[in-house]
Structure formats: structure tokens, C-alpha cells
Image 1: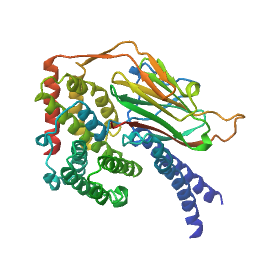
Image 2 (image 1 turned 120 degrees about the horizontal axis):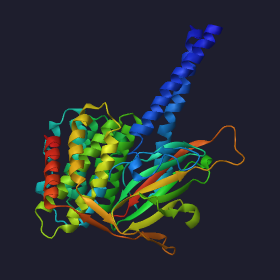
Image 3 (image 1 turned 45 degrees about the horizontal axis):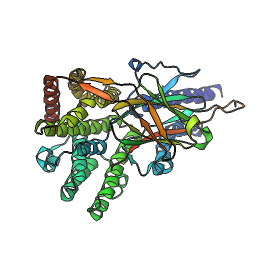
Image 4 (image 1 turned 90 degrees about the vertical axis):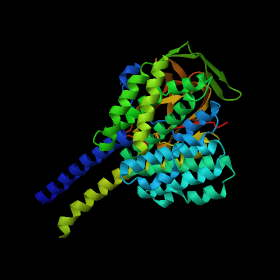
Length: 301
Length: 146
């Protein structure tokens, strides 16, 4: 009887330890984003309880493309990665990264009402999702829904966002957070690539260049996300390159004036006032552009 | 044989219950939280965790100049009225849910691109129980696609 109880206690301890590891993994890796770091001036204690760190993510391709459109940029299909190359990606890392790339390109096409192109890119995404083993039900027959809503820009956005978030959720639920992180990386790099390409070929582009410079924040978030997967080979390949990019972005100086907060109770809308001034040299921007171009070339080849 | 199997079944059930809680949290987010974000567009990635009474959690988000955003904090009922505050990175308080409204979301526009910290506090039950309640808390961020 004693031995029997000992076995039970041993197994409970074993499963508790395993479970704790899983939970730690969820909180510190897949759980969802980048940790606050002490450089923000926040201590780990704000009350009697330790602050739990919920990790943050990076802007999705949908959000990034929306920012590009709002910067008033014209559509240029030459900047996009060809959807015809979809079958060239065979490893999990290549497939994940390029799923992110095509996600950014799809969002870009949608914003500019390029519906046929959107379908082409969506089909490429579907193939890469299948290759990663993301179940069909996670995308909810999205290709059929996309085709039947082809003229409805708002519906397309909903479908694209659903597919992206469902894939993210599925991968995190199945302890494949590193794959989700690579998809995010591909999407971020492609959105940045589109932005720097347009910026380098457009005059009077200060708003766009400022937008690119402000992505120093999202690069920090991306690095925080990737550092949660120190054992992933592909992530370790890209981390040093992204760290180099971070060094280039550190030359960008963003100065804030005092913030004031105005609350419009009638419309339930708060305005956070104050402005930012962005300072950097032309050569710094060239360096950022070159590093992004190199990263993107490596991902799609 | 039966004696041999029982401890494994027991341990398996224990392990299974703990592993499913995070998955259930994400399902809770999809069914109970995401619909409340409309008409704002969900940014596509989950920020959810299982928290316990008295826990304080933080999240760092980047917001872009001139964009309209909604932050929506959603939690399972057993955690009570979960509070949230928004700070800038210099610890200046910008918003406190308890002082401004009873709604679980906050709509705002930022005049400059900046990072903000969302701090969540799960209230402690009074009187305090021996066994603390735990449940899913989700922070969603949406933007308007004008």
C-alpha cells in the first residue's frame, strides 16, 4: 500500500512539474508577446503582488498595410513577392516566414482593391497553411468565403484577419509558438520592405519615412517575441540580423513633447495629446533600408 | 494490472486538466471577447493568460499617430470586476477605468506614435477565501480601418 501511494505521489509531482513547465512556456514563450523591460522605468512590483508579464506581439500585416495606405502611397505590384514561388518553400522555417510575407502582400492588395491578386495571394497562403498542418476548420473554408465576398473590401478584411488570428491561435495552442513567431517575422519584414521601397522611390515622403522610423518600437517587440524561443534554429539565424537592424534603428531619436489627455465623454473618446519629433540622418535611413532589403531577400530565397 | 494503471490514469487526468486551461482561455477569448471589439479591427494576435485573484499583469503596446484604437479587457466572471489602467513609459497615468467608466473598453486616439503600458488588476474577494479564484483575462487591441 505504501509503495502504491508513493507511486501516486511521485506521478502527481511529475505531472505538476511538467504542467508548470507548460505554463511557464505559455507565459514566457508562446503566451503572447514581449516582456516589459526594466528600461521602461517600471519595476516588477506595483503592489504587494509581483506584476505578471504578459508578452506582447508585433503589428499584424493588416495593421501595417493599413498604415501604408493611410500614408497616401500608390499601389505598385512590382514590390510584391511573387505568389508563383509558393511551391519553392519546403522547410517549416521557410514556409512560416513566407506565409507571413504573403500575408503582408495580401493585405496590401486588399487595401488597394486588387481583388484578383488578393485571391492569388490567399491561395498561396492556404497552401503554406496546409503545409504547416494548420487544419482546414481553422480557416473556416476561407477561400470559398473570400471568393464569394470578392467585391466586398470590408468582408475581405474580416476574413483575412480571422485566418491570420486563427492560425496564430492554433499554433500557440499546440505549443508551436516559434512557428507563429516566424510568421509574424515574415509579415513584419515584408511590410517594412514595401514601406522602404516606396519611400526610396517617392518624393515628399516625410510622413512615410517617419512611419518607418517609428517602427523601432515594433522591432523591439519583434525581438522580444523571438528571444522567447532560444532553441529554434531558424530564429537563431535571423536574430543577429534583426539585432543589427535594431542598432541602426537606435540612431533614430524620437523626442516627445508633454502629453495631455482630453476625454470626450459624449463620444467616449480620449485624445492623448502631445507630439513627437523624429530625428535621424539620411545615411541612417539608407542603412535601415539596406538591412531590410537583405533580410527580405534572404527570407524569400 | 489494474493497480498498475490507476496511478497513471490519475496523473493523466491531473495533467490533462492543467493543459486544457490555456486552450480554454483562448476559446473564451474567441467566443466571449472578440465580438465586443467591433467595429474596431482585431490586430490578429492573442494576449490572454490565466490569472488569479490579486494578480497584477502588464502589457506593452505600440500605438501609431492619428489612429483610433480600442483597448478591451475581458475576463471570466469568477474574477469579478477586473480593473485596468493605462500608463505612458514614464509611468504617467493616462487612463483609469475605475474613475472614468464602467465599460470594459477604452477608445482613444494618439497624436503621436508611442508605446503605452496596460496594467490589469484582478480584485481580491472579500472576505478572502482559502482557495483563490482563477480565470482567463484577455486584453484585445483593435484599430479603425477608415
